[in-house]
Image 1 (cartoon, rainbow, N blue to C red):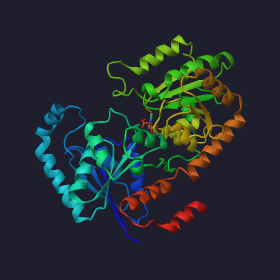
Image 2: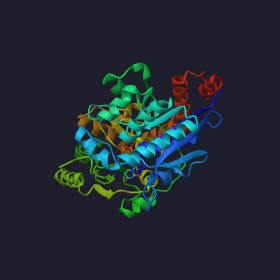
Image 3: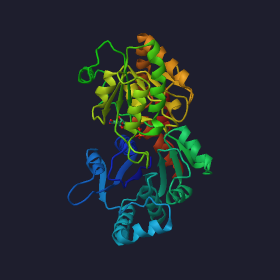
Image 4: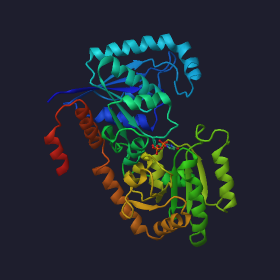
Amino acid sequence: MRKINVLFMQSQDYFGADSLVHSLLMRHFNRTSVTVYAACNAGSRQKESASLKALSGIEQLNLRPTYFGPSINHTSKREILAQAIPGGLATLASLTSLAQYIRKHSIDVIHCTEKPRDAFYGLLLARLTGARCVIHIHVKAENWISPLVQWAMRHADALVGVSQFVADSIVAMGYPANKTHAVLNSLDLNGWRADVDGSGVRQEYGVAPSTPLLAIVSRLFYWKGHVELLRALGQVKATHPDFKLLIVGADDPRGMPGRGSFTAELKALSAELGLNEHVIFTGFRQDVPQVMAACDIYAMPSFEEPFGMVYLEAMAMRKPVIALDNGGAREVIEHGKSGLLSQPQDIDQLAANIRTLLDSPTLRVEMGAYGRQQVEQFFTPQRMAHEMERIYRSILGLPQEVAKDIALALQ
Ligand code: UDP
């Protein structure tokens, strides 16, 4: 079978949720059929980038520290020129050298996120070198996406959404359905052992072992559903006075330009709804597995969540999930099996779903067990890497690996 050479573009210094998904691909491609390269933001002379640090732990990855120049996330030509001129020559030299590297290693596919430097430079490099370009999209596709990225999307060989919801949004923007695919994200269960101990988190916040504990873990960002969750809990407390909610995460400065602190808004709402005794704001925490282990219910009624890695994290920790029946969430959580879903804006049903789980520890255990099984059996990095390899083979006009397909289907 012909081996494929794939190069990942990791232009960002910051190692976010999208970088994590790509790193799982880099780690889990079958090395007998794919050789993996990554051009990764090198950081500065003083400090290597968070991305380089994270990727350097991956075995059998050909990692190439690269200078990607200044950000090009701009909407006007004037902004693009203002950024391009100062860093232009150095960026051009760096990308020229990356093109030589791509030719030298016979890279077949350049795999990018929808971040502007990944997608725009990735497409240019593909066109210069004859490689194919795949843009892996982690957000709902809408018109706010930079024109440079939209141009790259028009010319890419394949567009991959992290859910069918994202793939549909790409097609709804006018991109051809026959080059648009959905590959659902996955979770590496290392670090998400179901027997992690959450008692320390409960002790830290003074939550008794017998008190039902809900948690929402995310950037504090309007669309994640904190407001709706608090409003629903305002109803729930009339019938269920004994519960606590951990609001885990920090304000997302990009999330609410000109609106001030979302944490402050949520604290005010919590007071207005008489929930102060129930709600605990923890700020950003590194120990999400322990937080998940501590809670009984994961509740995040996020609006149009593209996928929601954190739902997989909750499921991995055997927690039933409360979410909305929209966006990518419905592809991750099965209503009645791994959690309970409600329609956006239906606060009464959201409250009813929470009550159902508060009332039945048995249902919580059953749903938690089903969620864990789904993560173990379906949301695996191996499945994700296999599906992505099939897309590569299809755009390269190479035969698929039939035997492995059959083996996977039989699992
Ligand atoms: N997260 C974390 N600590 C926090 C809040 C969030 O480590 O205090 C992590 C969370 O565990 C998840 C990620 O941030 O892995 C958020 O990813 P998700 O895809 O759910 O949301 P996004 O931020 O990409 O919209």
